[in-house]
Amino acid sequence: MASNKVSRRGFLRLAAGSAALTALAACAAPQPAAAPSGGEAAPAGEAVKLSFFNRGGQFIEDVMTTQMDLYKETTPGIEFEINAVAGANHQEALLLMVSSGTAPDIWFDANRTTGPLTRKGLTMNLEPFLEADDDFNEDDFVANVWIAQTYDGARWGLPWDSGSMLIGYNKDMFDAAGIPHPDPSVWITWDEWIELGKQLTLDLDDNTPNDPDFDPARVKQYGILADTGHGRQTYMWANNAEIIAADGTMPMDSDEFIEAMNWLADLGLKHYVAPSPAYQAAGEISLQAGTVAMNHLGAWMIGRINDAGINWGAFQVPYNKTKVSYGHYSPLCVYRDTKHPQEAYDFTFFATCSRDGQKILVDLGMQQPIRKDLREDFLNDDDLPAKPDRQAFYDAFENEETFRWPGDTIGSYFGGWYQVLLDYWGPYLDRLWLGEVRWEDVAAEVRAGSEQILETGEIS
Image (cartoon, rainbow, N blue to C red; front, side, top):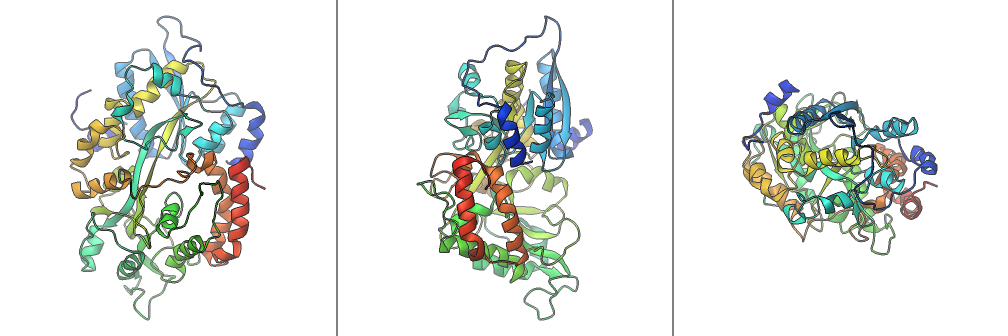
C-alpha cells in the first residue's frame, strides 16, 4: 500500500445483555489455547466468504469497507458478507445470531463486551495465531493497547478503534466568550473546569449560569459534557477513589467515591454546566453537533468531529486530587467455531495490526495508532486537532504516573465483566443523574452487587 494519506472525503465516496449471556452459557464452553490449525479449507480456486458483523453506524461501516476493499485487492479469493447494527445493543444481536446458527466469522466488538463474551466462550483465542505469525512483533506496538482484550493471559481480540480519552473543546465557542484556548500540556482542576463551563453555558436568551435569569430548562449550549460511561472512572481516580482494589473488593462506598459521583451529578443538577435528564434537552448534545463547548471523548471521535467541520482542540481530563489519564481500544474478534479460522485471523490482523490496514484507521480519524511506526503520521496529520493537542493523546496513554485502567490492580479489565456491571449500574445511575438519590443512599448496595458480579459474573 502506498504511504500517501487516504482522503476522508475520497473514501466516503467509495464507500443484550447479561441475561442473554447467561442463557447462552449452557452451549458455550471456554476455548482452550489450541494451535491455529483445523477448520475447513476452501477447494482450490474457490473463494472464501467471511461473514462480518459490524456495529456503530455509517462512519464505521465506511471505514471498514475501505479496509475490506484494500484487503480484497491484495488477497485474492476472499469475499465478505456484512451484517450490521447501528445501535448500542450489538451484543444482543450477536447472541441471537449465535443461537440461530448464523454466527459471523468476525465481528467488531466493544471494550465493554469482549470480556463477558470471552468468559462465555464465544471468542477465539488469538494467541496461538500471533505466536505463529512472522509479521507480528510485540515490540512494534505501544504498551497497554491490549488491556481490554486480554483475559487469562491471552488475547481474544485485536484493537481496531479507540485510544486515549481527553477533553475536546470548540475553539470558536471559546473565542466568542473571550476565553483563551487551554494549553494541552497544562492540567486544570475540577473547580477551574466548572468555572469555564459556567462562562460557556448559554440558555436561549444567552444567559449563563452566572446570571440570575439563567433557565436550566432552556439551554442551547452546554459548557461541559463529562463522559459518564467509559470515562466515569477517570473522575473516581482523580478524587483518590478506587473502583477495584487489589484485594478484589469494589469500594464504591468510600467517601472519595461518593464525593466524585455526587460531583458528576451536580455538574447538571447544581452548576447547570452539563446536560441532565432532570432538565429535558432537545437534539444531540455533543462536540460534533456544535452544542457543547467541552466534551470528554476518545480518539475514535477525531474523524467524525472533523467531518462535522468543528474547529477544535484537546486537553487532559481535569482532576481534583490526583492527575489521572485513561484510554482503551475496542477489538475485532473471531468466533470460536468459525469454519475459516486462519482466514478470519488473517483479515483481523490486517485490519488491526498491519501497517497498511492501520494507516487507514489513522488517516480517517478512527484510532490513535497502536503501531509505533505510525506515531508521526498521527501527530503530523493535516486535520484537527493540531499537533500539540494530538501529542496530548500520547501524553495520556504513555504517562506511567497518570495512566490507569479499571482492573489494573488485579490485572484484568473490569475482571472480564464490564457489560454485566454496566447493566447492573444503569438503574442506580439513572436515579443519580435525575437527582432522585445521592450516591451515599445506594453506595453500599451497589458495592455488594458489583462485588458479586466481579466474583461470579451474575447479577443478584
